[in-house]
Length: 207
Ligand SMILES: N[C@@H](CCC(=O)N[C@@H](CS)C(=O)NCC(=O)O)C(=O)O
Image (cartoon, rainbow, N blue to C red; front, side):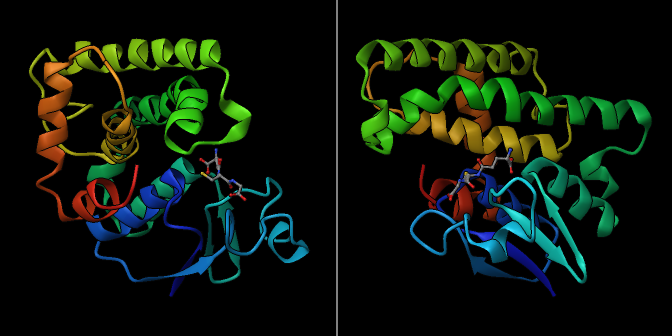
């Protein structure tokens, strides 16, 4: 059976939990990170050079980086519909996965850590305001794509891109205070809400 190392409050871990629900895959969750076992422990560092959760253990193999693990799981289970069945669709889905983990993820961090997690290291009001502005600017990019009429990020079909982007939009919805309205993003969020995996690991899984 697959082992997912991490803790369920982590957005990057929840990507894998949701993906396993979509793919009807069994796994066991081994607690690492945050308030559980420290990711600085030598036993954990032996699993990944990066020292971050999630890590997937599949037999003798360990894989890190949440979005790469998503692709691995989809290919491993033959769910090519989720990862893309041509070089072009794979690139389009991969493009969103890369953007999510890099640009989008970095936009919200100070605001999310300060306002939602209450982290004392992120309490600078100017930094939070700048981060909220950047977060909104990135959500506006998604709004522009969805407003063209597709149900999902890469077209009419649900893909891995929706797991990474969907949980990020869930995080946007959880941000307190005044926010710009995004009608197509809100409709997308409601659409994802019909999926059991998103209900469990997104909507009910914490911000
Ligand atoms: N790019 C990495 C980021 C992983 C990451 O930032 N993980 C956080 C939790 S979301 C972590 O391991 N924090 C250290 C800890 O909790 O001990 C991925 O997508 O897997």
